[in-house]
Length: 257
Image (tube, rainbow, N blue to C red; front, side):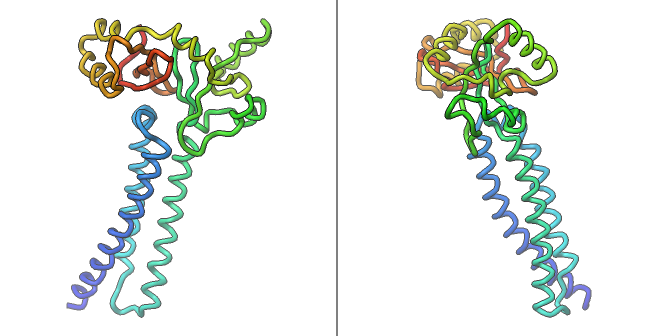
């Protein structure tokens, strides 16, 4: 009977702890998915799985520890001391997970030769940020910063850049190669973008997906264009471009020929 009474008491505390933890996790999810990883970046970068692991640990371990520790035989002070300790462990675990998600957030959208590439904050060579153009020397805390890429100043710089790219640091990751996202960049984008109708005709199996994405832009398909949209781990997306060279939509369709 005593054991049953203790279990019922512990379950009530654990359920209450679970509800409170759920509210905290809900707020954290809002920050992650709405501020740091809005679509399409959350899908492209696979943050849902990583954040899901953080949430699972936080939601399971906290209430489970409360279930183990809570007892009616303990004084109120002891019970709150236990709950405080468990809460601090949860906060530490959630904070560590959120930090890992934050430093890998999408930070830079770069036009690179013939595609748009999303670069995460931890991929940017931070020691080169001082060499970026004014206004591009600090990564945004949320949202993405759009950049173009300058041309090499001489043959040796061009060869050195190729070597760095082969080593794993593309030009988009190197702030000393960034250029302001201006009319010149938009003109280059428009020169490389292809009519959206061509990929719809070429990939009939993806036509519905592309037409739905175009519909969300509020513009006729005939007036839209596309470029491949890539990350270091994903290449099977397209960015939908309007007549001014702005990205106005996206779709999970391979944009390469």
